[in-house]
Image (cartoon, rainbow, N blue to C red):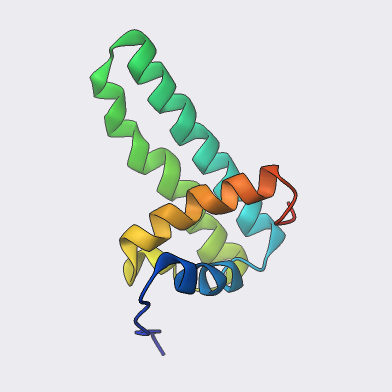
Length: 103
């Protein structure tokens, strides 16, 4: 059954987001995808190659969705909560670097 819960804030959403990322391989794949997104953005700015922005969805979503479909065995939160999910990717990335969320 789809989770159609409404969240009033990102702070309310983030614990749910983390619960949907309990598998370490899924989190690691998110980390790889988010790292690639950051790298592509940096290259885009450094080189002025704006066409590289076309690679952002592929870099970010391919790793994340593989983590969900093959390891976490759930449906990505992006489908129901796209903006909060995008923020969640970057907050979880930061929290993984800071040791708040395990790799």
